[in-house]
Image (cartoon, rainbow, N blue to C red):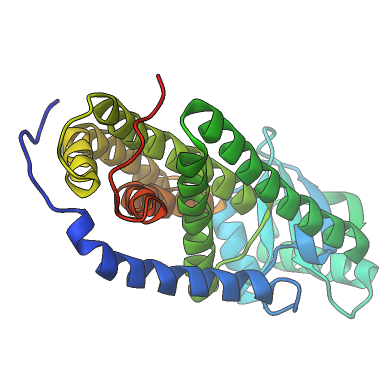
Length: 304
């Protein structure tokens, strides 16, 4: 699977251009993050609160047709979830000023007229309060922060502190980039998307560690080449592995984007964006940061 061999690409020579691109992505990510507490982000009922209505139909139904039916009746933002039992459906709606009981009856009326041959009962109607939503926002933020601290500690212990800082910056860059693109596309941010962001962080770290491991290995050889040449050579040496890993992972996530259905579409999209950005940051962000940390001088060789 060694698709590319003996490449001599000057990755660090393009660092000024890639840094400009990354700064724009980070700014977009910060705008998206700031929009969440300001109430300007497209948040799901998990974070904003709302109502969850569980229906039990007489016979199985097609969830895509049900979603289309609700969209035609003015509930295009409704989140639908089907259970293992194909006759059960959970409908989540964002908080509104109307009476929640009347809202559930309205949704029931849509199903009565739109699916007259499939009777149903409402098993439960649950209100998701704004206090719960705020707490989930806080917990999601802490999940990201704790993961970043864990990455810093692990990489600093596994390599050196400067490697840990570079890995955290690159990973944080990837999370912000994906969040920023979702904000730009007006995609809904839910707990599932937070899960995707944490998965992206893990993937980015794995890819970065592979590059760092080769850099450290070449540093131990104590060659006479300068640090720029050493980093470029190290990235070129693992380029084939990076291409194979990223492309195969991307194929799997893109398959979910195209064929996975509406429920998992945004999750798979976040993963696909994360694979692309994570691969990019491992080469063009994490590695150049080591160079700037070292102030462009020959490094102190890494310990065994």
